[in-house]
Length: 377
Image: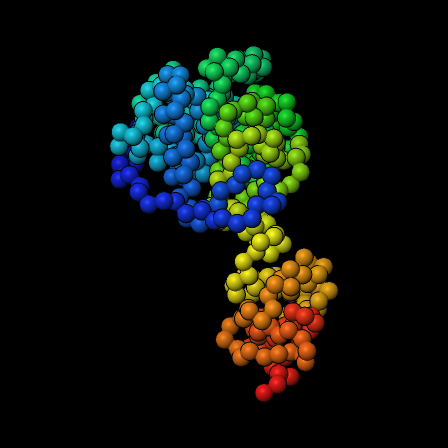
């Protein structure tokens, strides 16, 4: 039996999230600047659901995920249990998936993962734990998948579903091509998914080619869904899932149809969301000096021009006209002197270029840029 994490004192300070415009986000996202806060926030929510549902119905049903991302949540739940804050004796669980074929005692088995990292450290009844069987004879797999769906329904449905997201956008093992009506079934794993798992299996050739997974419809039947993503390697697919159109190419986009789905992200995983990556495209931007500098550097890179070569057209074509209209004389970069750029124009303050130590002044009115040598004394 694996050793449980030591009890921790109850957290008192409020969690910090990054708040800004969500105009392009098609479902709720919560971004945490501190990685550890994500696990605490999700554990908070799970404890709330457990306590609410056990009071109301005498039991609660959780859908659980595996992988590295949920480990912090499980560790936090274990600590809460050891501190006497949460009781798992009335909790029923259903895991998302399992490799096929896979024996439950294999070091790669999700059965083993769940017992070593969570179940063995809380007071959950063994008969209340449900994980797809990776040793089911192939001729019985279809019936076993149907029985898994029946067991979820018999338990009253999933109250809270925990998810991760793969680089292909899969939730569970719903790979590209999975549709919104899919139910628990055996699937063929995507090549990228198998490559990502290769290190854990000591070579991609050892990764099973199939898995048993809850379907998209099974997941969407949950009353509440929390998807966790951490790390910059997830940033691209997170942005696609949150801001892109619903598509069978990315199963996670189907979560946009759910009324109570939330993406919990650390800052690296959120890095390609518009409000994090290019917030100046959105309305209501606070044009701080740091924000102005970020936007101008971004524009120079996007236009493939030096800062001094940027024109009013560049700003307009890259949705930075609001920047020109709002910044006027109020913003400054670095510590250069203030200087009007042209006679009769509203002036802006100097910008330090990224390619040299020279200063430049950008005129918000005429769109021209003047170098230091041309400033009036």
